[in-house]
Amino acid sequence: MKKVYLLLSFNLLFFNTIYAQFKFGVGGGVHNAAVTEKNNLPNWNQQFESYYTPSAGFHGGLYSEFALDKKANWAVQASLLYTTKGRNFAKAYDSTKSFHSDTSSITSSWKLGYAELPVYLVYRIPLSPKVRFILGAGGYAGYNLTQKTKYEYYNASGELTTYDNKLATGDNVHKYNKLDYGVNALAGFDFNDRIMLTANYSRGLSDFYTAEYGGSFKHQAYGATLVVWVTKSKSAKLKAEAKDSDGDGVPDKIDKCNGENGTAATGGCPDTDGDGIPDIQDKCPDVAGISKLLGCPAPDQDKDGVSDEEDKCPDTAGSPRYNGCPVPDTDKDGINDEEDKCPDIVGSSKYNGCPAPDTDMDGINDDEDKCPIKPGPKANNGCPEIEKHMVDDINKAARSILFDVNSDNIKATSNVSLDRIAAILLDNPEIKLDIEGHTDNTGAVRHNQILSGKRALAIKIYLVNKGIAPERLTASGFGSDHPIADNNTEAGRAKNRRVAFKVRY
Image 1 (tube, rainbow, N blue to C red):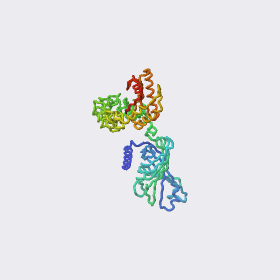
Image 2: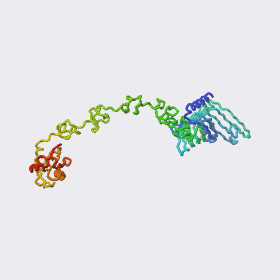
Image 3: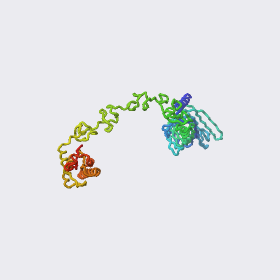
Image 4: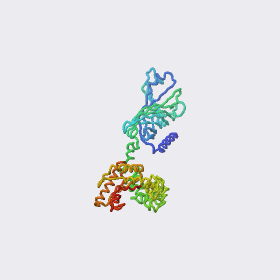
């Protein structure tokens, strides 16, 4: 009995230690128990073996199972059962071949009861969402609790003699071993993790009886088992785990504020400002803050998005990149270093913080230099002095330009002079030319004004047609406003009727 208590204690301890990972159930079933016997008795197979028949038995007890994977397809299944085993014998004799003098028939039975601990490695194959096919194999250990034998003899006169004895246990002859072990297997169906129905087979590997003759005696059984799991079914567990009464996406099982709409980050509790601190703990529930200040925002005096605690310039709005200070402007040109392509040299926004370029290196930047590709003095706005011979050539040509009387039509004899002026302008693309038309004081003032302007314009058009860009030329008529000689003499009036050119950059 001491060993029985040890077996029970071990099983209960085993179950309770890992209760949280197990499902439990109760079950039992019926089986046919037989004994496979092998011996060295002469003619035993022919004379006796066929008269031994299986004995009806039952098994029942507690079941448990530990899942090995998330879907519980692989699992270890163990149970503590009471199981009956044994066999029957029946034989009749004629009068000439009686057994033990005048015995005409005999029936006997072995009936043994075991406390068994079967252990299976099982695998379930899903057939539908609620039905799985189950296969399993493993071993068992048993401890003999009860052992009885019963004999019934009929003699030739029909008299019955009955023997109903408790069998002796031990390792000697005619005794039964207390311990038994073997292998087992099962196959069947599992319904929604609630009902398990299987067919079972077991075969002993140890001899449970010691005969006076040489032989082996091993248990064998096959039958059916029904198990009802008392823990929640898989679908019930999933349903319970997924239940969300307040519909906030946080299951009731882990919802700290069940009945209030919350977030997963706050354990199902409301968080109005979305700062990860539930309203019940948030001192500023309508303004996003930090946990250090119980949900209130850190102070930011200059409103630059950097809290005063981290702001190195708390009174001046700045940038997080510079710890709350403004972006620096090293060269103090009003363009911060992040946008200044020349952060160490004073520049202008037009050139991204760099100084204006001085292409001709004359000390006058291109923005102020009227001749940015030719060096010149500042007094001449960065342009070189116009060569005297060029001015002389243009003025000489100007004196040879003639028009028809009282007309802006240029005489053909003037083309050579105009072509010379065009050539000078083409060779010096940076210079510009102001064309001025003048008349004497003969005739109406308005007429002279218009005529002088038309003549200046006619010369501009001629030069443009020779390839001079129009923006390099200006045409103006001054009439008789700027005489260079006495209009009271014919010679003076002839000098006043003229075209004048001014060369500039």
